[in-house]
Image (cartoon, rainbow, N blue to C red; front, side, top):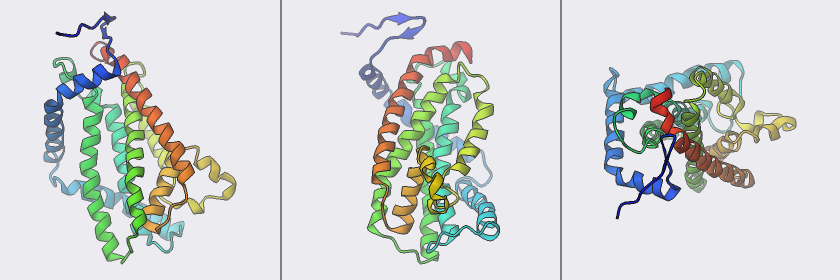
Length: 275
C-alpha cells in the first residue's frame, strides 16, 4: 500500500521518519553522488589528491611565520608547526562542510531541477567529501608526530566523540544556510568574511591559554571555542578538562542539526523556483 502525502504550495508534507525512509531508499544514489564528487574534485586539479596535502601545508606556512616568528605565540611543549597543522586540518574540515554545504544546492541546480532525489544528499555529500580531505590531512599530522617525536596518549581517543560533535555542528549550519539561501541572495558574499573572522576569534591558530582570563569565558560562547580547546588538549597535550563545556556544545550541536535539517526540508520546495 502506497503512502499518500499532502502537498501545500509545492511542499510535500512528510514526517521526519518519512524523510529518513525516503533518503534510505535512495542510498545507492547517495554513494554514487559522493563517489562522483570525490573523483570530479580531484581530477580537475593538476596534482590530484596531492592538493589535499598541499592546501593545509601552505596555509600553515603563513601562520607559522606570523604566529611563531613574529607574534611568538607559545605552544610549549608542542612545536608550533605541529600545533597549527593539526588545528588547520580540523578547521578546514569544518569550514568546507559549512561553506560548500551551504552552497551545495546553488552549485547543483541543474540536477535539483531535473532529478527527484533527497535534497539533503547535497550537504551530506559535501561532508563525506570533506572527510576524505580530513583523512589525508591526518596522515600529515601523523607524520609530524613522528618528526617531532610527539608522544601519543590515551586521551587522543576522546577526540573521536569531539569530532562527531564538530561534524554535527558543521552539518547543522550547512543545512540551515542551504535552506535560507533561497531567501537571502547575498549569503555567499558574506559567508567567507564571517568564516575568516571566526577563524581568528576561535582558538585555532593559538592555544586557549594565551587568551586573558578576563575574556576567556566569551570564547566559550562560541561553540568552536571549547571544541578546539578540547581537540588541542586530547590530541596534543594529553589531558581533558573541558567536559562541562563539551556537554553544552553537544546539546547545542544536536539541537542545531535538527533545526537546520527541519529548515532545509521546509524550504527545499523553493529551490528550483527561486534560485
